[in-house]
Length: 159
Image 1 (cartoon, rainbow, N blue to C red):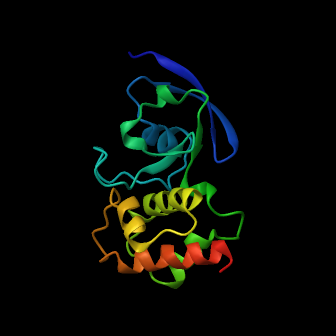
Image 2: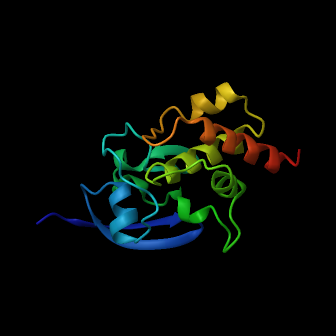
């Protein structure tokens, strides 16, 4: 029997305390212990970006991070993007401009795009494509995703 570790972290502004095993990834803990199932597992190897979250303000693949490494960390997931019933501009533009299809990659892409726009509110198309290069989508040709991010950036800038 493996030893359980007591952890405390802040996820989307809420404090959590829980027990987890040494081998559990942050993705496993978010989905299985905290029941925050918006973050998806696509590959479990850090290649697809479906599990993207922010970890202390930095974009990270939650499948590659051990939960025990996150003691006291501040985590941002897709569940923290909307404010109640009010969608984040990225979420709204993805819906309005058809920037999503099956939904497996969408949470990770939205988290990555938000991370980009927090750092650069007026990215070029090349910068958006570069920033989202770690997020793979099997359903789209990426153009609607890029247009959705551009529209949200413009809206967020008030342009």
